[in-house]
Image (cartoon, rainbow, N blue to C red; front, side):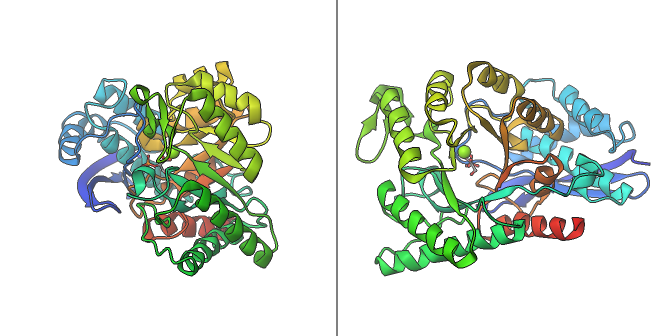
Length: 401
Ligand SMILES: O=C(O)[C@@H](CO)OP(=O)(O)O
Ligand SMILES: [Mg+2]
């Protein structure tokens, strides 16, 4: 029933106005799935390779499509993804492009779900999924590679950990985003938005912490549940060996100072979550920090792990973190993303499914998070390509109730 009969690939726009790859997959019995690849700005050195969309499409048409159409069943996701890997023939999808690969992988899963008449999260996660929902981490103030002349730390994230439902959590993050807007105007610091819709004011990190604390506690009082906050430091973007460490606007911190600084921030602000506090090559410094504060907060590897099972194995071995960010396009297929999630969960790592800074209306990650019982989802707070996923989570919760 789910034999793949056609795959169409095209260039569409992403939220930054760049081209990205969209895939349509059709099956023998009329199943249809469509998905699009997102794209990062603060990409990890060890990510699978995104090719220019034209090239990715041409190469996937030549090497992958003929091996899938009429040959593989959409319902057999592992076979689909193994075929993509075999068609590519490299470790990092540099032949057909991780953008083509992930678009085909996700569109195939949707086509299979369509044939089965099941929501995607159920097809991916099984009949008993839909009871647990991830806590959405909402990017509300940001800078780094996502906005010029703003904070050094890439993302300040609202974390409504006490929300009674995913819908309450989603609305709380939007309220924090609005509250920050009002506070910035009061402080005479008007701000535009960065790539993910977070406010990108020209303020330093210290002021961002103060604003975030006030905004989250104001909204927490209004909604009556706890809202903590967290960070994506995206420290690999700051790290410069020649400069002697992590380059902030006002100073350079060496590795020990960076570990100390982040540990102090965790204490001072009671952070719920810290992503990429250190360079992507420094499993050891990650382990030092995790030893210091890993019992109080989540230390999450994004650029460190790049959704890659072997890098995660190294992290587990060295106790480098206690959580992992999952971005299917970092590794190129749903199967690889699932394997990383499974390994993480088996080793008591928390799982955070994540968007990229360049996004489309695609909602696959909302389903992936529910299907895998992920603890968190990081997919912005406002903006159409972000609300596409947040609203889908609300719909899934509604559907599953
Ligand atoms: O660093 C990150 O976690 C992501 C998403 O927030 O950014 P980018 O997609 O630019 O890598
Ligand atoms: Mg990150």
